[in-house]
Length: 378
Ligand SMILES: *Cc1c(COP(=O)(O)O)cnc(C)c1O
Image (tube, protein in one colour):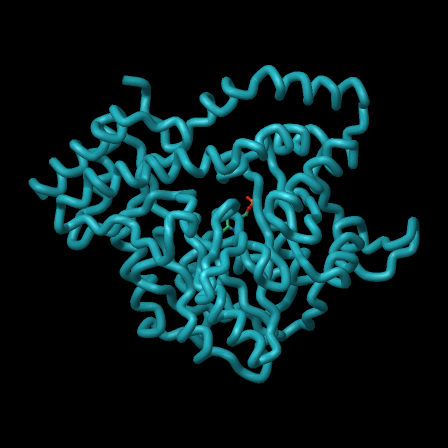
């Protein structure tokens, strides 16, 4: 059996190596390393794929979030509500801009932001909400948009883990995650569902005025050469990465299907244990693209499990072991532990299994056999 990795990018590379090398070679020969033709190609191909009016590429997913908040014209002290259970980048950019992060608990089944908890935290200074489509599952965006509209708030979707997922509205209509809020952001970090061979990110919006604002901000606040109308940043997707991403984009649905197939196999094998909670799906099979395959295991010595799996040649990950409200950088006297009971519990119970496009049935069988054996005897 092939070595099991948490993320295995080799197979994806082998499949597209010829095209990829040709496209990268072309960039080298054109020497247009910044804003070369591949950037524009990728931008318009991604707009078509997402069915969104504007894609603005940038340097990474964290920049995308920061630029989104800058484009909304928020003022220091304005409050932005986001989930306690996510990667720190989401809350980091809020704090960096002098805005006030307001963390809220998540749903115990989907691990996504709890809309009722958001509603309770809306106050006179609240300006925006950042839901995260965590682990690749669409957050409950329809009620969030209704809430935002009622209170005149912006919604920025952090879609770094969910690219290619589709949210189903109550009407049955579907829409790509990241294209429903006022702005959506994503990351092309190599291990993300659409990964570059280095850093990359992008913003999405259907709003022409916001798109214009964002295009200036990514380029030093310039809307006309050497006229700096707003304070901006330097955040670009470089041409080589755009060539990689443009080559991989046609395979994104296929990559996500591979992840979903692996997830279904895991579900089937692990479902027989009553101690293991396999990932809940809020919607149909389009709603979750399994950036991570994350289990909850109650009353389990997780560190011992991680060690045991490692000894069996099975890597695993804990996303995320410490809730954001307990991080030194983001703690606040305003927070009460009782407001974060779900996140606190998840931080103790979750474990993510290897998830990527190259998993074989044999590998999944092996992982599940070892995991079930440990759970039965511990
Ligand atoms: C990866 C990730 C980011 C940041 O992306 P980078 O490209 O690494 O800056 C932001 N939010 C979430 C939820 C992520 O998973």
